[in-house]
Length: 233
Ligand code: SF4
Image: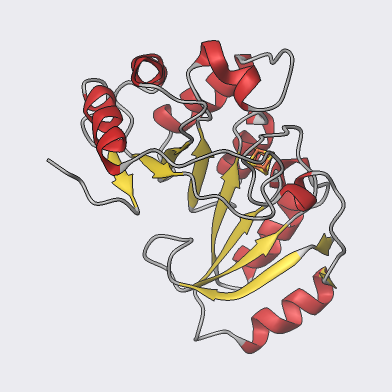
């Protein structure tokens, strides 16, 4: 298995862990606001293979205690589960990011105790999911299955939404709230524009708008929080 990016240390990507972040290639969505679009489209160059990564990890034992796996959509990578197993066998905790469309992979990871934390995207209200993810049509049954898997299981998790002014409005957070009602952890994070974002002209909601959306979703998910934005009330 190849790696398409490696951040050697992060205090932010994996809650309560000093981790490195591994980037895998490929994604089945085409979100117009994607920060890793080259990776998502499979156009990024590999930076190292699995053996080089485990040699790196061995040297960092004692400095790092976790590995965050992101993409793209990591669940599409053949070899993901054995890779996670090898990370765990080395004594490191594993965090997995996912767009939630591959419940079978999440299920296997959970069942075999290969993952310590799952961060799953909720892109938008179900009625706007396809347009928010660059698709004409999208079967949301796998997404719902992943939501149920996380909410009914014991693996720590978070749901999160990157909020883009052109795609989200207050009404959407009623639908999202109904989808993940009672979730243990849900974060709203503000979109930030970058040169690598495929769709030009997208913008960040204001802090006030973020606060408004938070208030809506807290009717369903009282634990919901903003990430990277000061709460205004
Ligand atoms: S799911 Fe994530 S990696 Fe895939 S296109 Fe959307 S933002 Fe990019």
